Amino acid sequence: MKKLFTILCATLLSIGVFAQAETEAGIFLLSGATGLDFASQGVTGTDPSDAWNDDNKQSASNMDLKLMGGYFVADGFAIGLSVGYESETNKQESNSDETSGNYRYVYESSYKSTTSTMIIAPTLRYYFGESGVWLQTSYGFGSMTEKDESDYSQTETEVSTGNVLYSDSDSDSDSDSNPMSIFTLGAGYAISLSDNISLNPSVGYAMSSVTIEDGYTNSSGNDEDLKINMSGMTFNIGVALHLGR
Image (cartoon, rainbow, N blue to C red; front, side, top):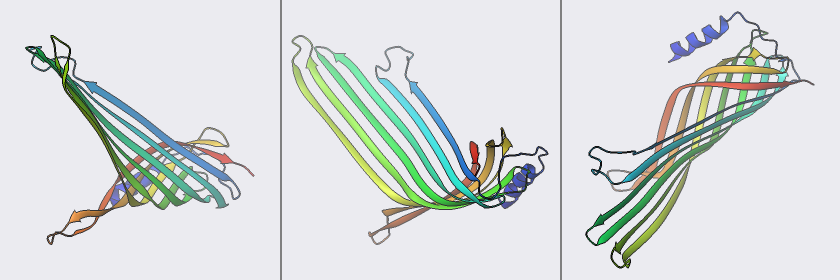
């Protein structure tokens, strides 16, 4: 992993285009990146056509927002604060409407799961002269929140009279928040669009840790905290504002 990160940094340093965005002492830096993604799928038919009368749908959405504000305390060296928010939502819906003899059965259910993270991290960024290449590191704390929501209803009706013979419905919601920490190390390149605006593609490596309270039952039957460590590569494209004195 260290070798891969070294190669990525060397690739950025080898770029021959020079950026001219302001990085002198006294300049304010505001950088941001965002991403949105949505997908939806549903059953449109079966063969044989009467094999499955259910109407099932699945959808997923992702939102990612990263902001960083800093101040150049020296030429090329900025100290700041990063804020990161990420949310992933998955939803499933199932509906069935069947008639058997003089009876009609209707069933509807939905399940929604949302996982979101919020991180605030002190950040250091260093620019290598006017090359546009920069290195950044941060260490932050926040939380990971998981929320589950479910609803269902079922009805049995007598077709000839329209009388409801049986009806039931229920809904449930559960939310859990756990502390989280993350360390990131990244390298980027400022492609100057003007003296005050730059486009910043970057790569990085992130290590995070989440602690789930009473998330593990040991061999003695006692609950104890479960700590989950994660790591992986990251890639972002953001826009930065360099605000003069």
